[in-house]
Image 1 (cartoon, rainbow, N blue to C red):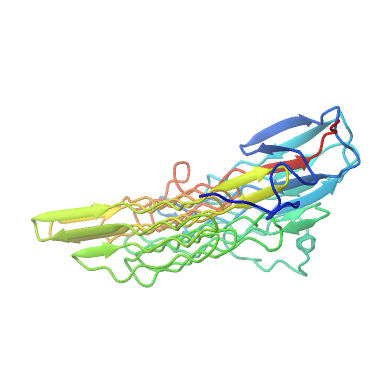
Image 2 (cartoon, rainbow, N blue to C red; image 1 turned 60 degrees about the horizontal axis):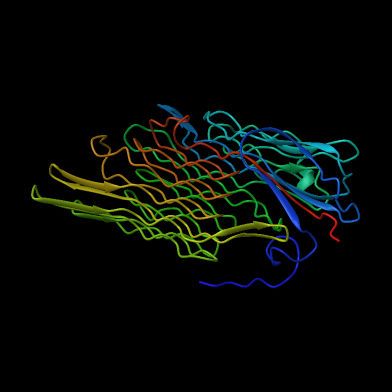
Length: 397
């Protein structure tokens, strides 16, 4: 499908090759890096720098924790006059892997400039307020104060500072636990804070948030929800029975459909069948004059059983900027559980999961999905690493 974006600058518009800038750089994995500006940097054009903190992790480890989803990383944006042939330090925070931890802080620093930094989101069993001044986001106080899975906060940005979305609520219980969806990071346009992951209740998980929509709370027990898309909310499935189960659909994307829900069917001792969910569709563009994330949300999982016959499927992954779908169970037993919720796309939150299932990982700067019981943070439900992106201009003859 062909697309044409009108000329312009900054995120959300512009044609990649024309406009204010003609070069860009990205750092998307944990570490500290040195970026030396080109000798032909056009110092008359301010460099635009985006810094996202890392995402928080699932709030459950084994039988411990509260099962909330992780918070999304904060965002700071600045336009800076940088010197040519000069070294600057880029730090990308690591995604949280501990249920009581926090995603790492990302930053951009160097001589003669105000450092941009963005703290990481809290893991789902961490209710400590992020470090730094909450007023940097233009809010008189921290609206997430005292809650589990808070989002990180941007500081030092001269364009905007934003807060990541909270993780959805959860509860750890071996027979009826539930995990919240991961919160999203703020969208690159900087117009709003990140969105909250979907809340949950017994025997289910909330879906992951997108950069424009919150995650979804499933309709009732034993249901799943599709992840939020960049153009719409995910939906919940209907009630499940001992014969059938269908997952919720992922929310629409700006540039692609949301994933369809999974199905699981069983009948007596004769037959079982299942189909996997759809992953969210859509693309992303990171260019000198355009940042575009257009993904759909991942579809929800399904699980059912009749007598000794059991069938199930995982949750679907979110597209760029979108949330992962949640997975489902159909009983308090472990003998047909261990399903996996969908991962979030870049900046999106992972899907949450019921007991004996695993939450999805967050995309870059997105929070991981929570788990209702038996979560293992170093393998599932992890926060995404932070992200630093730079748009600049070099001189042309």
